[in-house]
Image (cartoon, rainbow, N blue to C red; front, side, top):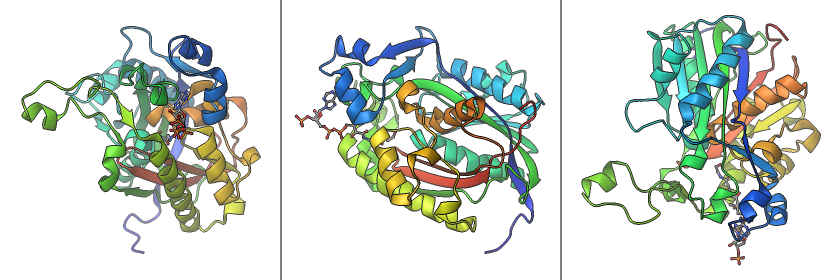
Length: 338
Ligand code: UT7
């Protein structure tokens, strides 16, 4: 392999997360949908999730998580803000510049990354690239989604899973051998299967047809059963590649932080990788599937409650619409103030 950027690496320097205060229980959903607490718990592992209140948007979630990550890093300055989201405040412009401005960072580079539930992994690769190329010394990467604003409340296969939240990390330029340095980010997509997860209306295709959309096309749609199968296969394969790239074996992994899509997917991936539940981080029972926020929110909460500690060798993996997937490794660093 050609070492294009020598020893310089992106190093995790801060972490933060936030969920909106409004909690939705399974019974709340069962009150108006043909579902039950028992079905949702056994088929998804979810007990509660959080929802934005009326008027709240993705930038509001992102600002809260971003501020906490900056505080955790001990330094409020960055050169770039990257926001991974599927639910931007509006189609144009990107949401990241607004988030940056509200964090007192007007003037810095800021843009959105669109890779649905794999957005945080694509964002890590993007931020690492900015740092490796010398474009930035410090990057704030936020994953934030207000999925309840695009899910059809009447669609029981998505409304019970998808939820709202945000998580963020600060990455700084450092050395590839120090704790917190990101390993190679393994990424992939298969656009032949893009129809499995989509929002059909609102983009250029539907608009250029000059027709109003059919009922339901403005909502998020997912073929759950097929997606489930691909999720297990792709996260397993990407994880194996990332671990091999780091020169580790799967037995070396202290903590797996996988996209919190469905507890049964997490179990299946864990079984294939030989990583038992006590080495897996999980918050799906409390927050559901928060899209691009899933992994950074999990990191923030696990760091706060001590299930993730300095020195843990970590494997991160995600999967979602695109189809898109990714994985990477790092050793969790000691963060300022912890
Ligand atoms: O985050 C990005 C990627 N997303 C994922 O990875 C999600 C992947 N998919 C899943 O998590 C699961 O496929 C779901 C949770 C969406 C669905 O669970 P499943 O075990 O795959 O159920 P299914 O789609 O095979 O449906 C089984 C049955 C069906 O009824 P019939 O046809 O057997 O009579 C569904 O209509 O369960 C029914 N069903 C429900 N029943 C009660 C589907 N959703 C519900 C529900 N409550 N909420």
